[in-house]
Amino acid sequence: MMKGQLPQATTVFHTFVRLLHMPSKQPKVKYDAVIVGAGHNGLVCGAYLQKAGCNVCILERRHVVGGAAVTEEIIPGFKFSRASYVLSLLRPQIYKDLQLENHGLKVYERNPNLYTPLRPDFWKSNGPRSLTLGQDDSYNKEQIANFSHLDAEIYAEYEQHLMKIVKIVEPFLDTSPTDIGKIFSENMYIKKILHVLSTPELKIAGRQLLSSANDFPALWDFMTAPAGKILSRWFESEPLKATLATDSLIGSMVGPHTPGSGYVLIHHMLGQVNGKIGAWGYPRGGMGAVSESLASAAKSYGAEIFTSQAVEKILLDSSGEAIGIVTTEGREILGKIVLSNATPHITFLQLLPSGVLPSQYESAIRSTEYSSPVTKINVALSQLPEFISDPSTIGNKPMPFHRCTINLNCENVDVLTKAYEAATKGKISERPLIEMVIPSVLDDSLCPKGSHVCLLFTQYTPYHLANGQVWDNTTKERYAKLVFDNIEEYAPGFTKSVIGKEILSPPDIENEFGLTGGNIFHGALSPDQLLLGRPAPGGGGPSAPAAPFTPVPRLLLCGSGSHPGGGVMGAAGLIAARSAIRLLKKS
Image: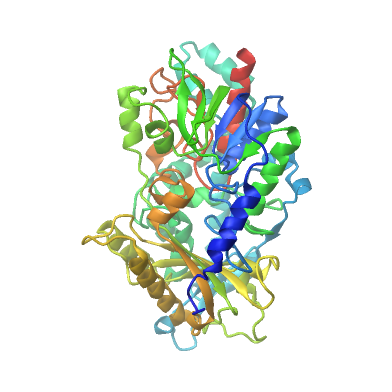
């Protein structure tokens, strides 16, 4: 077998895995709730519904649960988090309520968090060659001072500033837009007040908003301003600004100077690991371990989960209410309520009969922005990459920076801007943004001893390429070589250490995981596609009810295309479950 080629045994292995995941029994004819898709949100939703006493069926198109949060052995002996690759955003309440630790979930906390090596042509005599940021304020100050003493002094203040904004935003992650929309729809002020006081999540969010009134202008700034503009107000060091800017860009077809990109930066600060706010980690066994623990919890309450069961359409009765689904095999499964974990595009434009939606709502769904800049490259390595900016002193053993996200081509914001601008023209930049993580440094269950699993999250790669190019194998191999050549400038010998790889272009991500446009968030996290604008503007009217409700009675959204958006967060599933429970109780 040649290095870099996927072994033929992989096909046999995948067949074996599919056989293992085939359902041992068939779904019943009728349930209280039928959930389309066993992504992490669908599993969260199903677990809460079943825990509340509802009879739940979850149907998954693929042979494995998890949607984009999966672990798969693409190369024999190497287990990859094929799509999503780090954990932080999963809501603490979900950990607690579903007792995920008891269902096998263990998360390795990363420290340090970020590592940005510089290419040799950016080195200055006796100057810094890399930037590392972690959870220790003194260490961060020391690292940043190598580039700017002014930035070093103000960095802790910047983080405190972000935390104030995070405290305002976080309660709204668990708050239903339907409840928020009701504030505006009620005619009498007393009813508005009573609604807030009688809704626990809304009450908490309102209290936090009122107590942080002085910080609201800063929140508005992050919601509307470009990340590059915000960062330039605080800092002068280009490597620091570029490193921090990556959190505003990852997974989004936006540049550092795109208005509203500041929110995505906040979005990635909304999580925690082991109680540490803003920390990120690697689940033992890969991201699929998160989904498996959620599935285990759901099953422990009695939920039934079926893989290799693709849904072809959502059934409606003569009055237009959702009453179940039909699988591609022609099996009808009825439910008092249907919840979709698929993207809004798939849910409304592929699974429902045409002409069902109000015309304005359908137009809004069709105009939803799904552009994706992401190509994921999963790589099996024979050894750790050695960075010339920080040569190893301990051989092929992990250095601290190997634990964290390694940002390449982040010497300055201009590099990121040029990569984005190329993508807007359908081109691929010669210097893509590359996020490298090596989870096997902390998790020894992923691959043979001495070798490593390396995950490359790269952008900007447009879905539609210019000049008639398509994402065929030739294009993907050419792009992988470009990425590897870039890595070679930082870590010579990287390409020689490659045992095998998988390249997932935007169309591949769409086809494999059902993510419209290859967008990892089920739709852009732009200000117009958040809260009452997600998945469509309206916020409570009969033709455009607020999420998780839809214009189709008894059809709810429980995926990331609903509020509060993408990431392995689970909040959309939890909000949908609460709404569905109330709806079923009224039945």
